[in-house]
Each structure stands twice: as structure tokens, then as C-alpha cells.
Image (cartoon, rainbow, N blue to C red; front, side, top):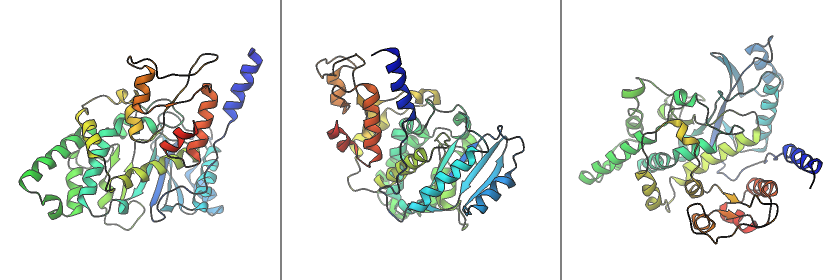
Length: 357
């Protein structure tokens, strides 16, 4: 392979485009919304009115634009998993591209309707436990096109894992003396108790946390009522990334109410949670990613050859295989990446992905 061949392969990989799915495999009753920040520095004549008018003229009336300090924020109304929804999201993001760009300091918040968790306090407690145990890998998974978590997240999407861990442990202690605690407590009161974890440290009405539950008990009938706001994702103008993030968070919430909720594994993860800098979240924990059913494929970087599970040292093939890492046989890294993208986008779960490799 000469330099020209290598350049041609790189061009092909860079031009490879992941198709937006017409629908994703989620409950049709699930509702969601999005908030995307972008910088308008590429259009000096830009006004919020212009963008909102363009949305209206193209019949995207559920979308609106507002000025948020030095950035512009595009908000959607309540959306559902329909063909027209995903088509609208893509077209709206394409419009935004003509008005500005995103940078590493921009965020892309996902709002999910609370009806998924319902009025069962045990389900909400499962959510607290699951989020505390895997918050670091979720931050990393939702970093989008950027290879790291935005630094502004330390101010506007503060990690909550350690406080969630403390709350879960306090509830477990209380249940020893009052086993009926979760059944006796009203759900809105229970959510309020979670919210008060942050009033003492971040101010009286702080919503700038990785998960914002202040809207979960909002009595007003509007777009921002009865939703869980996930503030950790980086912004993106790629509809596929938005679709993946929405798909992930909805399935994350649905898992919290499953009868086969894996307490044993998740509680082991909770033990390892500690106070740390958000910069430490950039480190990828392969085992935690696999536990969240995020497939990880490993291939050889050599010109020819494959990966084996022969060596048992730290990071060796045997250890990786035991973790659940998928071995890509003789595929080079570029082909393995494309194959993985296609497998995920076709709706395969982690076990189905492993079989195609």
C-alpha cells in the first residue's frame, strides 16, 4: 500500500455518512425534546427573529430560538418517535448550520418525559443508583464529535454521582428501620428530596447538574414540565448523534423499571464512586461501557494479523476477552469501525454485534 492508497482510504472513511433511522426501537408513548446551543459568529447580520421566522415558514412551529448569553439556543417542543419527527430534527439542524457553528463549549441537552419512570419510587431510586454508578461513562459516550467532555460542563452540568451515591446509601439505611418508606412517600416529595441534595452546595435553585430533576415535578403544562433534563451531552448539528443520545437515555430510563435490574453488578460499581474532577471522566472504562451495552471492538494495528486471547497480563487479550470486548478478527481498524457503525445503526444489541464479528 503506497501513500496515495492510504490517502484514498482516509478520504473514503471521512466521507462515510451514517444514515438517520426513520424510527428507533423505543416505546411509542415516550416523549422527548432537545436543546442545542451554537455560536452565531459566522453570521454578523443574524437575529433570533430571522431564525424563528425561517422555522415557521418551513412549518417547524415546535422549534424556537432564544439568545442565551453569547450563544443561541434552539429548543423543540414535545416530540415522539415518528418518521416526521426525525426528518424535522435533521432539517432544523441543517438550517442552523447556515446561521452558525458549534464548538467544544456548546451543550446539547436532552429532555425525556417522566412517564417512563412513573410514580414508583423504587424505579426512581434505581435511576439514582444506575446514574451514580455509570455517570462517568455516560459523559464520555455523549461527547459527540468531540473527543473529550467540554470544560464548561464542570459549571453547567456538574457531576452528581457522589451525591447520588450518598442519597442512595441514606435511603438504604432508612429502609432498615422503615421498610415501607418508598411506598409511603409521595413521588413528587421523593424527587424533591433528590433535588435538595444540591441546594446546600450549588445554591437554592441550581439546575446546572448533569441530570436536572427540577423540571420533573413542574406543575405547569408546558414543554418544560414533567421532564428529566440530561445536560451532560456536548452539542452537535448531526441528527444521527441526537438520535443516538435520545435512544440511549430513553432505554437507560426503561431499564430502571425492569424486573431483571442487575443490582449485584451495579452495587459493585457504586462502591468505586468517589469525588473527582470532571477531567477524570475522559478516561474510558471498558468494563463499565460494556455493562451499559456499549460495544467495544479491538483489532490489531499491525499490517496483517489478528488479535488473540493468549496473554493474561493487564490489558492482554485474555483479560479483554473476559471483560466482554469483541475481537475484530483480521479486520483493520478502519473496516472494523465502519462495520461497527453499520451494526449499531441497524439496531443490533451488543450480543448481536458480537455475532457479526
